[in-house]
Image (cartoon, rainbow, N blue to C red; front, side):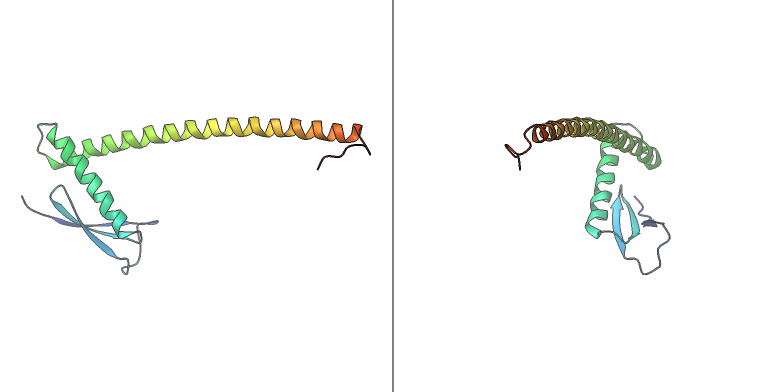
Length: 127
């Protein structure tokens, strides 16, 4: 199999200066030079993840077309991302609801405390 070399920029704008470090990775028998201001080890882990997904997809299909394998892998990764986003949103809304309940309970307790302090003005004090 032939090994191509492509260059990819990963960063905030995608247009970093040429001094950005380059990481060489291999994904599905293709070599890519990736420019990123991020952690080199993280970029390598991402490439290994994509490579493993592509190999997993190719072992379960009859296609040898690397573009089709890449698209199927991208769909699987996108599905996983969207499922995790949905779980995250559910957890956020549950946390917001519980936080609201706690705030309401605290408000009620503070009102009871204030009422007791006013009723016992001079007698028993709470601190």
